[in-house]
Amino acid sequence: MIRLAPGECNYWVFCDVTPFKGKTITIKYDGEAAGLQKIYQDDKIAGYETLYKEKNRPQFHFTTQRGWINDPNGLVYFDGEYHLFYQHNPYEQDWENMHWGHAVSTDLVHWQQLPEALYPDELGTMFSGSAVIDYQNTAGYNKKDTPAMIALYTAASPDRQTQCMAYSLDKGRTWNKYEKNPVIDSKEKWNSMDTRDPRIIWYEPSGHWVMILNERDGHSIYTSSDLKDWTYQSHTSGFWECPELFELPVDGDQTNTRWVMYGASGTYMLGSFDGKTFTPESGKHYYTSGSCYAAQTFTNIPASDGRRIQIGWGRIGQKDMPFTGMMLLPTELSLRTTKDGVRLYSVPVKETEQLFTSVGKWNTLTAEDASAKLNEFKALDGLRIKTTIKLSHTTAAGLNLAGQDIISYDLNFNLLNGMFYSPQDMTSMELSADIYIDRTSIEVFCRWWSLFLLYGAFPGFF
Ligand code: FRU
Image (cartoon, rainbow, N blue to C red; front, side, top):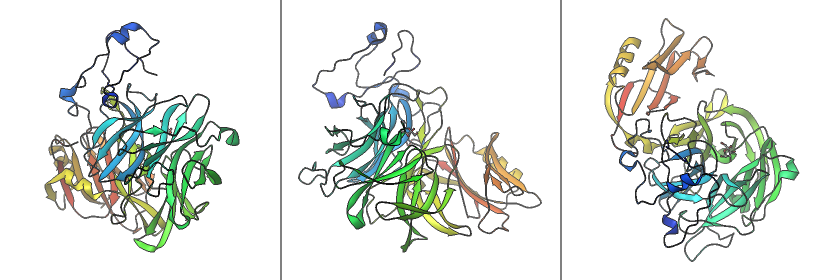
């Protein structure tokens, strides 16, 4: 569904028709014809001159040029490119009319937006899903030396949510949908409209595909040998939307691993997985809070790299902008042993280091001096702060920038930015944080350092 303004419009949106070059496009529209009259064709989008320079445009987070974005989808690394597909309404600032938008990057930090990857069809709009590379040609689409990139996604109609498949042989630029879609239709089995967000992994020990699918009240496991025929195996209740399942070493020890299962909010369970059933052992825990939602991790990261890289959706509105939402900084996930047991950690990927250059370093500042320093730099367009706060003669401490709380720590109630926080060393009076401030967001990562460092963002990157 697309609404067109019959009169004065608030903002212009566009449809990149590059893939249709040389073809005839028919536009059907039931609304007022005056809206149609305004459609025009051009090589540049309206607002091109100020694109990425708009007042409330995040400068080091991915945002879409126009429209609404939510969940990251189909995160996959292939042939030198990281692919970020995402829930996209290309034509409005609000959620509706979901497509899969598409962007690529060679370093996880600089992104290039490409034309839409998946458009709504007769089965519904394009809800969340994931992508894999079919090296063994299990689905039969590979061409000579080109393995197919295969996406499993949810098609959402007013009546049901079904799981569908599409493949691409040109690095995700154009997609062909499987003619026998849907591959799973489980509404009746679960007596629920909520069956969505297929996440695919290759389970090496038994050589089969695994789909983790949110169904009604938790995550189900399905298996397949060809990505088309799926067999239901098991269900873990206690999660909602956007499932994830992956294995990680504990403290880097490859002989001691746990499987992590999480849902859209980021709450997770740790356990074991045999290719068909996830057996929870501890949880639910959380590793993030705030505006992060529906985070997904990349598939097909080369073994020589071996990282579990995640991108989350930042549920953040951009005031008076022709776009809504953003992607948070890519992070590396790891499992570490803490005094409470094994827990999941999330730290910005090393590639983000290139975004900042050091502008100052101070030791032993008083709280007042630190605030004054911060305010000196608040005009910088993008700021990173690495800091250790030492509490003395007080039970509360924090950092505040232009009236906005960045860190607020209450040692009496053990609350850090509203969440229960008990340091690794229970008697510690120190709190360390790595803070990334963009135009409309602040991301705070708490860990252990001992300096107060300020970084200014390089101008002109996005
Ligand atoms: C999570 C979610 C998904 C769904 C998508 C639709 O934010 O509700 O479950 O697939 O958004 O846009």
